[in-house]
Image: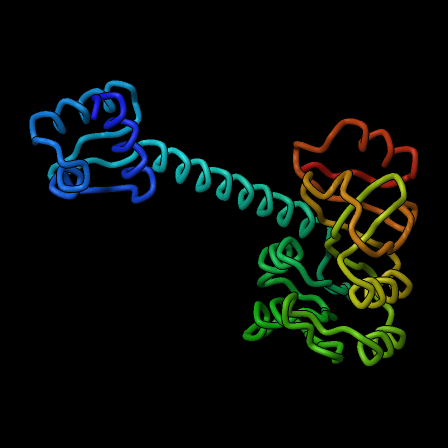
Length: 251
């Protein structure tokens, strides 16, 4: 087997296993230790592997893993900034409805220690405030939708129709020129009730939600008072929100 062919096979073996020891490589390729050492040196020179004690590791896998971690960290930081900016819009003593979703959950974490009358259909948010002495927490009741961890359906909507709120903080599946949309009709049904009974509607959504059309239409953009998002919002949506009279807060 020529050196170039061996090196391709070596790279494939290391790439699929991330790390492989020299003895295993030599056995699989039926090659001498000196030839294997030269092959690994060449692959290292090309920036494909790094030789370590006893074998080699794939630099490509490590780079991809770093990329995933960096992207996850960046998304987490964006969500935290959105959460802080949205929480700053709320005042102690208000009655606030909080929808489900990870971004709304981050808003909730930023409100720990504040004093609000809080209504939610989210199990996550109920858990966040379960030990709070300053928060008056009311759960809507309803059918527990396991995938999202929220209470939905007729009982949830009936309860919501009997309350009034100063502010609604809600997440969203998508924002387009046609308005807001979300993942299914049960979610949309409860969110419509939340909008109906709230004097101010705040939507929290990172830039990835803009231009996305989720399955079920929820409401026109004019139903929203404020959208809190991150700095990567496409410019065309800034103009669209301005035309629709929606306040834009960039975190």
